[in-house]
Image (cartoon, rainbow, N blue to C red; front, top):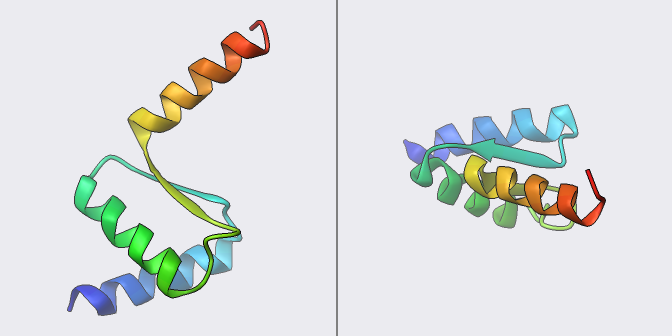
Length: 66
């Protein structure tokens, strides 16, 4: 059943042409990473936890002097 849900999520993700999928749930993060790998989309889409995305943004702002 979880793979059917993942198939639906990946279909939606591909349709949006998003480059980043953000989640707060570790289980969802693992599932989305699996879906990205399974669909061969690793070069176009990434899945990240929101905390990691916020850390990345903070580090980028320091580098860019913001």
